[in-house]
Length: 302
Ligand code: CP
Image (cartoon, rainbow, N blue to C red; front, side):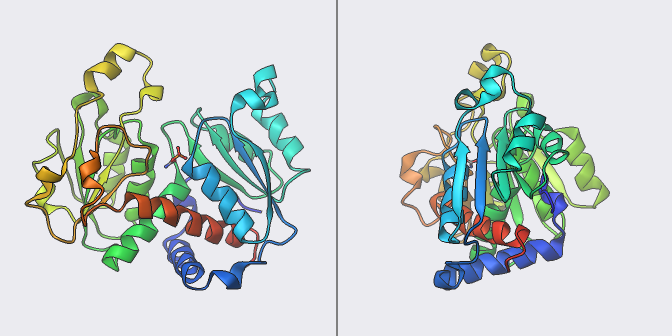
């Protein structure tokens, strides 16, 4: 029994193995049709989701398993005041594996103290989103064939963006170079910059989306997350700070790929979707394959 709270709970070797399994699933999906037969996944989503919940559920169904769960705190007994600990103690009796999303940072750690089955963090507040990172890594690996010596631009809400925090940590196993693009209010937290310094991984910071665009191998855009702001006046100041459109791509490397965990607002305009650089919808699809890989791995069905 093992829980995945943070991408650093997986070693570099395990990440490589999961990416390889996801690749194999894409190539030979029929091989995996019965892998989780008679197993049940519980999706406990205390915060809204489209991709993560549906891809977890689709992944388990594609593995021959079954799915139970709820898609909002309002439709669970959390609304009556039930604690996370009690919810998990109960779900232990109903499911073989749990995927949980919660708006509070650290909630999955509390859940992991009570779970009797593998538990996967499907996103906790501004903290971590390890399975999104696996989808990001699979997409990068497909397009670049390596994680080494890539210049990765992370742009947008770098303060609250759990996907960029997890991606940065995962890539620290390799030798990337980062560019952080954010307004002053949403800069990459010092704790992650210190983490990179300790590992001698170079990064540079800017507030201009165009300043380092031409050097990027991957541009990872993110949404400014209204739901994380306590003061909406502050959100209004920064909500439209970046908007990537196709005319801004004229000088970029031909092989540069744009990723985004989605949902997007105005930070990528729709005219970018039809360019050779847009990979965010493929990235969302890849989320299902890596979730198939991690579910079968944690259930010991390799
Ligand atoms: N990328 C992601 O976490 O999307 P959802 O919020 O729709 O699950």
